[in-house]
Length: 211
Image (cartoon, rainbow, N blue to C red):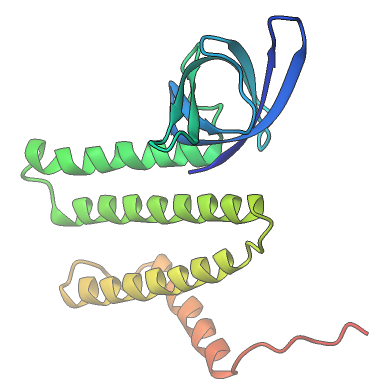
């Protein structure tokens, strides 16, 4: 995960400095900043997330260097832990991790739970993980000045996979007598499937000339 950050601080002589950075290894307590110029250790700085505009106060915790002496990053510690400062992607990532922990714990505490409930939870976790990855990939490509639209192709492909899987699950549930096809919901589903089939048999869409 990469987040663009604007770092601002004041040097001992009173000079105010503003530097662009990229935050990695992010947590609610801080991150590793990649930046060209940086203040001394223990310097208090102001961080601004350029994606969402939110600002926080932080402190330079350490300067990390590789074995060859090259700068690998600047450790920054937030004065107050924050989940919202790092933006939506971090919050989605954090929520995914929490759901994954719940998923692992459920079979131990609720051994009599229906397998379909656990399966639905796993699918929800996987869907959130996929969406989080897409948002993250979009941001990183945009930061590098590259076209982010290929991410949409991946999401479209994933939607087709999910729809196929869900339809197969519904067929299995109907065959097992676990679902009734006599409800209004299934009537709506049948019409939607018919429209989808009719649209698929017409072939790919053609772009009309606006001129």
